[in-house]
Length: 289
Image (cartoon, rainbow, N blue to C red; front, top):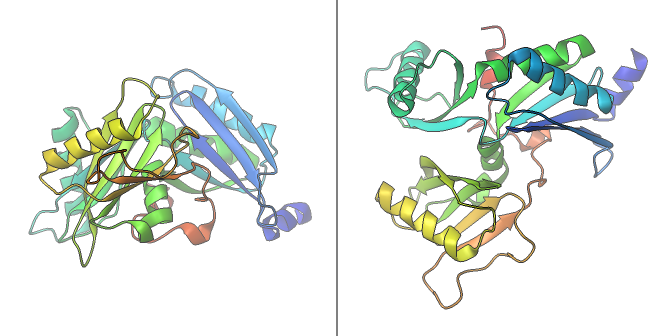
């Protein structure tokens, strides 16, 4: 017990990244810049796995790095979840009304029942808000994996939400945000000059992971056209880009947006990085539901 308390006092915690075919665990310490230990497990597509199979993979990586008794912060990759914007009804008077609006929006967009999905959101009345649906069996697997190790699942945060919380001060109607993972780019389109707000989230899937700034800008410009909004002057992309792609614009195209790359390990694990605006505190509050 004393050893556990000392580890918590030192700021030790476990970061858990859950992707479609890979689970990565990192034991971190507030006194160290780098992870104390890292482990990973490959698996079949987690969307097709049973909850017990996914739980076993998560439990294994937690055991590999000695996370017993430590708080666990989980990050869900963008290809595991589904993002969508919800416009609350004008007569919304309760959380139940907002939930119903989100459920209806999900089913209308994806053409399937919402029951197998856990819907998290920045629940707000009066303005459109971002919602994210995670497979219930993934959330269940996370909870079951940490329980035998006397750990606490502190938060479950979708990747784009984590990036927004980290980079929100750089985001405006003239500077959008995206997260990049392999061939998938999750794009947040921002509007409003005086009070920037998220207007849409689009998922762009490329044919391969050989990204170029030119192709990236073309796809983002197409998304802007579909939304009927002006193209932003710059784009912040959080991910692990090829080293040959620093912040740059398309050569010879003065009007093209400037792309600013941010590495995937640029800090979303500290509690101080989490903002009440879009942080996924929903799982924490709804753990008993």
